[in-house]
Image 1: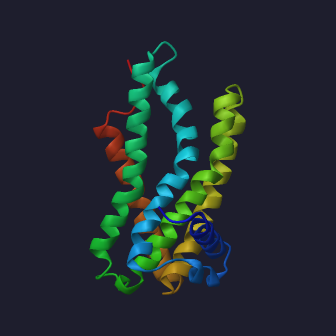
Image 2: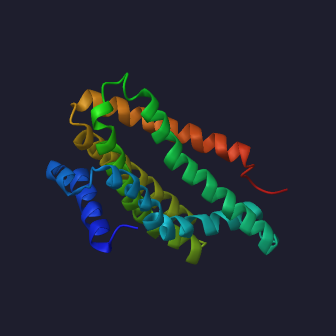
Image 3: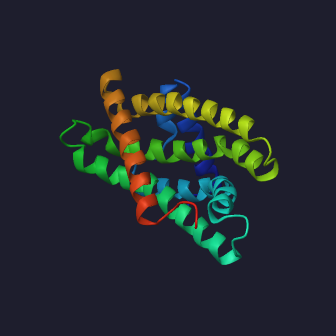
Length: 198
C-alpha cells in the first residue's frame, strides 16, 4: 500500500493533467513499483463505487428481495465494474506496440488508474442523491449526464498529457479505451446476469 502522501501526490498529478497542466505527469511514480501501486487506486475509489452499487443493486434485485439477493447483485456489479477497469488496460497492452505507444504505456496506465479514482469520486453526489433522495430521479439523471460529459473531456486531456503523441493519437487511444470499457462492461453484465431479477 502506498503511503498517504504518495497517494495524494499522484491524485494531484492526475488532476493537473486533466485540467491541462502537463507538469502533473512529474508527480506520478512511473517506476515498476509505481505501475503496480497505481492499481491501489481501485481501493481509493472503492467507497465511492460502493455508494453507486448499493442503490443500483437494490433496484435490480427488487423491493421485496432478500438481503442475500441484494448482496449477490452488489457483488456482481462490483465484478463488472472492476473488470471494465482492468481488462481494457490489458487489451491496450496487447496493441500498444502496434500503436506506437509502447514507451508511454506505463505513463498512461498510472495516470489512468489515479484518474479513474478521481472520476469515481466525481460520481458520488449522484450516488448519494439516488441513495437518500429516491424521488429525485430526473435531477439525478441530469446530473449523471453532466458528470459523464465532464469525465469524457477530462479523460481525453489525461490521455493526451500521458501519451504526449499529439491529439490524433490521444483521440484514437481515448476512443479505443472507451469502446473497450463499454464492451467489457456489457459483456460482464451479460455473463454475470446483471439485470432486474424476476
